[in-house]
Image 1 (cartoon, helix red, strand yellow):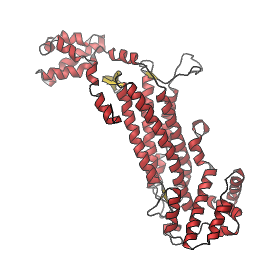
Image 2 (spheres, rainbow, N blue to C red):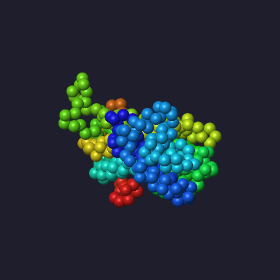
Image 3 (cartoon, rainbow, N blue to C red):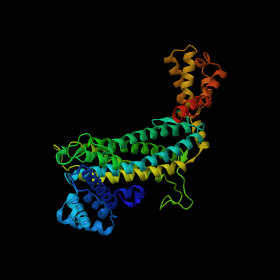
Image 4 (cartoon, rainbow, N blue to C red):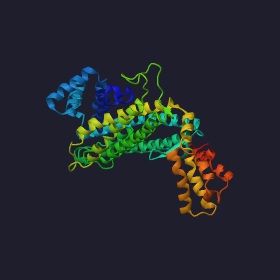
Length: 437
């Protein structure tokens, strides 16, 4: 997590001040619940809030760090500093709890906070894609398979496909947030032996979490694996869209390109360059987010009721994956909002192969007119190859082929070379995707 690829909205969630603030809330809410149960004095719980509920400024954070250098235990260092603030009543803090109760519950809160920002980011991407898709709903463009011209589509349909994909990603992220937002205040090995389950229920409610049904001193890591997998899929969707833009911006294609600012420079050596640097950057950032998935999966298999092999991993991938994905989504939204589209170049590319893109319509028309599919394929392919090799005109070759004209006259053939035919169901697809035409 570096400043270059960070936005404050998510980065601040992982700052020590926010972390320690959540730790304090967990402990203080637990004290309230314990006081209600009569386990600790009500006055002690009140003292925790009154004397401990102060901002975690540099002075407090430095003190915690100083203590940790001696204790080599972050939660104990935090509790020691908190006791210095509270005084005698601090002996009632952390009653029946274990470090993982604090750490795991805090991580759940932080991931939920980060996810709320990510959901808003996806909404911005969806808004941009929907707007640009409607703008180019009927803009004809070349559909490609294997990178080769296939049949016509519209640029709006291209963008609609990405919209649908990111909407699925949003649904997955909502589900991932619900799965990760669990609270464990169950004590050593998760048995509640020294703390009542009511404490967990109280803390969970106060922090907007659900109690973990069964914890083994730690919250089960399959939840985290599913969460980071959801982030990884969204990152892959970002890369797919970024890769599409990179291909469309290639000089030989140039159907769309990233907005090039007035004073922007593309190359230190070649003043003419306008490179898809934002999309390339997004491709790289997607790799970083996906890099968190495998370690999160490997964290699932902890020893017995707990070990801490997952801890170092999550201290890295939690901030890095969420901060990076947040930055990538906002960058992607900007790319789509400002994408420069060239319908004229799209039309030029459509015409580049001399009508070959209508070969399937000719094939189908011949079969419907009585020719066998095998013979129809052969005769269409026979006329298509010279177009590739000699830049001939496909329609004229077909008109001159006696085997073809035996089944289809010139007027019928010309009617097959109609671009509008390929856009006749665009409205249907748009209604499926956007709920309206």
